[in-house]
Length: 323
Image (cartoon, rainbow, N blue to C red):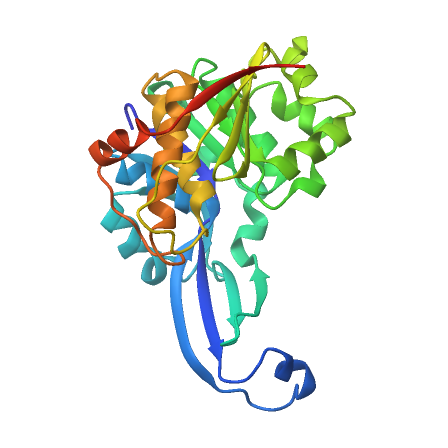
């Protein structure tokens, strides 16, 4: 585990089903058997996607998640292909998390999410799957469980084991659970917050202070940066004294905007782990994100770190002072 990066977050399968009929036909004729023209299964979840991006860049991620009895035959080959070490909380009575996407040929979609074994993530202890004392050998951690109780628990465990390493955190579809009290517990121990602009505005509303004041609060002295992912050509890094706008990296052809944010997170984390200045780390994030949009939905992409580094030189960082 020496020099590894710890990732704690979701692993889930994605089952994509394409209808011969229109989506509306499901409501109009609910008892009818509806034929599919196509189906496909792939893999996702913020934890797994960030771990995959880091693995592509040559890092050895250690992924912690909660999975079900289907883990070995659904996920193990994928994890082996990317050399991702998984420390899994296994629930033999449940299936792993799954996202079902039902679409029609007109492009309309319905999403069905079932947490299954992942629902109980916060009930597990990190010490059950790894020796937490070995966290002294980690060079960083990314914790984004989508479960507030689990976030607080695992962030505290990692911080208490090794307060020197950077802890990066992202909300994951749980922004409405983030009360002021819970946010305070998170911000006391993390180094960097990475979120969407909508999530950041919700955080400001819940805490009743703006992003600049969050970064200036004495109790959150470990929190150095907030990174807002608004859209691919508008990422803003906030610090106590200034904000920096990061441009998009050029993509040869944009086939899908799906997945760029987790690719950005992976590139950013890679830069931070390699002690790059935050602007340079964000450029790597933008570069890896540009490779993600060159692939169709959820398809793996395989740029080398050399390719990502070269493309990052075309990303611009513009300093701006607070008003």
